[in-house]
Image 1 (cartoon, rainbow, N blue to C red):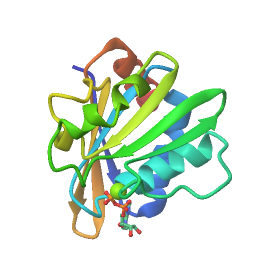
Image 2: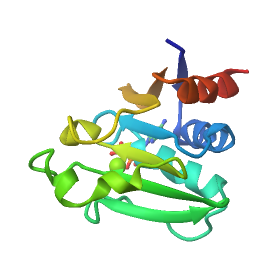
Image 3: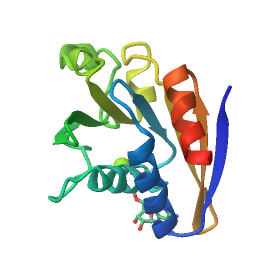
Image 4: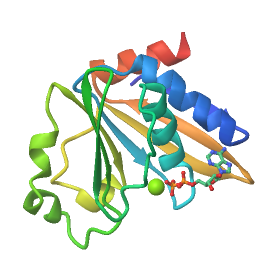
Length: 153
Ligand code: ADP
Ligand code: MG
């Protein structure tokens, strides 16, 4: 497995990781953003989406479940399944078709859709470390590994 750990002493460090990810991603990539409330999942996603060229607001998808961006000639879907009461809601909503070779999917709270959401190429686990954060990345496909290698090279 290809893994990497990044210390994120402040919000700017998390944003920089998001900006670096924007250069490392490729169409078809599925990224799970894991970690507690306030760990920085949306902050990371927002920085990534802005770095891709989106100039408008990047809302947390907590209520809408998904926000769609068309940037840098790709479809980027930012999901948040926190409010799911059962994983089957993923299927009922028809979200399966959003996961394809032309899209990039960022998924907050993937555990809430366990068994229904496709497997990730890359898992990013964000953790509180005092007032700072730590990001642990683990790739589970060649596409994910290539992303981690770009970040660490
Ligand atoms: P999540 O989506 O994981 O629930 P958010 O990104 O919405 O978390 O919120 C993270 C909060 O933590 C923000 O208020 C942000 O200002 C704060 N914060 C403090 N330090 C960091 C850090 N290193 N990285 C990200 N957010 C941080
Ligand atoms: Mg969030």
